[in-house]
Amino acid sequence: MTTQQVLVFIGPPGAGKGSISRICQDRLQWKKISTGDLCRKHIYEQTEIGKEIDFAIKSGKLVDDTLITEMVAKWLENQEKGGSIIFDGYPRTVVQATLFEKLIKSKFPSLKVTVIRLTLSDEEVIARLSTRYVCQNKECQQVYSIRSSAFAPRKENECDSCGHQIGRRSDDMPEAIEERLKGYYNHEQALIDLYTQKGYIIPEVDMNQPIEKIFTILRDMMEGKA
Ligand code: ADP
Image (cartoon, rainbow, N blue to C red):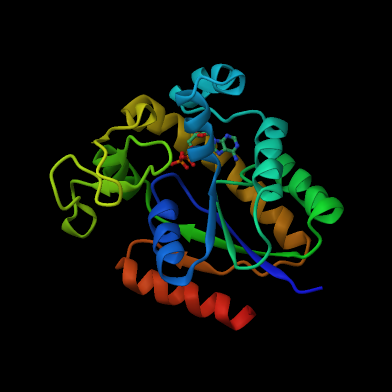
């Protein structure tokens, strides 16, 4: 059985998980699943799940562990085999990590998980989220920043990838940012402890450095494992 690499990022909101994942998708043809993007798509399409999770998302709270895991299972079922997969924003709690492990064992035994911790100071997180813009096309959701020319859209208010309008996320407002950061730190250490107990070595990547450098570090880490 050939193994398929899965990259799990543990890192605060705004660390740049989405941005670096996008680069790895474009340049290395890795696949990416963002549970945040999946949630926002449900809300936009006003599905039953979307109606259920709308409030949690807007207020920066986490969505139910089982529900999120079901979304992940469904996404995995629809993927063709092969290529590395980046998990952006899942698992984020010990319960999710445990459910994910069960899911892999029972249905996707060829997946091999690597866990990487992404670090960034709270001040930088807040500065990034407060200046973040996201493509409003729910199939795209590309991330931009008006703070850094490296991440600004080429045309004002327009997504480089699909041409849709870009805008702010409802949970990138100060109260929700605070709630998300608090939520992240509530789970971070327990998640790291769980993976460490299971024998994972968790390398750290400082996200406060040029994105090209981060890309090289991640690519080299994953090539070492290929
Ligand atoms: P960020 O990591 O920047 O907070 P995401 O786009 O990853 O943003 O997630 C946005 C929101 O989607 C979260 O605040 C939460 O409500 C929901 N969400 C995403 N992933 C998960 C998850 N694994 N478990 C629970 N809720 C999640």
